[in-house]
Length: 202
Image 1 (cartoon, helix red, strand yellow):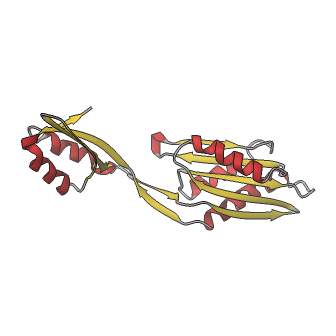
Image 2: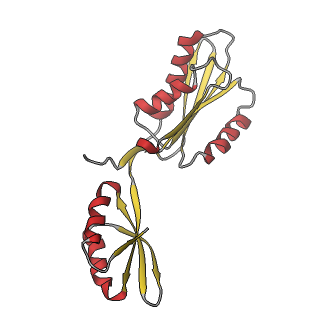
Image 3: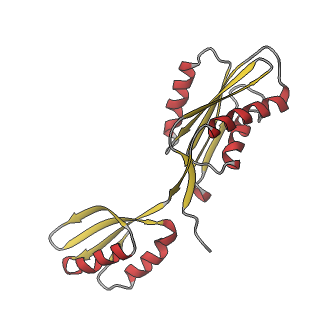
């Protein structure tokens, strides 16, 4: 089975807007790497739009079994804001992304279908106004070997197109940490194990 080692995300912030019956929905999309970034971005938006009635959001981080996500309706009827925002992240196959939608109430209730549509369309606009990029998922491996094995190790790293991230030297051993594409990790490990004198440090 082929391992998927790429994901789609955005690189920079973008904004969008949707209007319906006097209500304005302002959307803001951000690239994030960790859940700790969400609180600060949300705080910034709440300060900037302190007079808005709702500050709803959804985020998605990671892929596959490592995926983490959250939705928040911030006072809107349950399932009418956070879920439609999150739904757009899924339908566009985007991760490592946070979208916040700020609502200014226009005096006319939109009802559940209207709210779902508004939050969905506002999110869609912020995504359309951004550039989607594909990124590669890497694994980090630390390989240990004695000095006489240096040329063999370096040739293997070059042949397998892995990038060296860190090198440590002591009196007897060398430790080199490399990053390898996730889909190539098992093959790379097997090649290391087949060379006497190279050891994967765990």
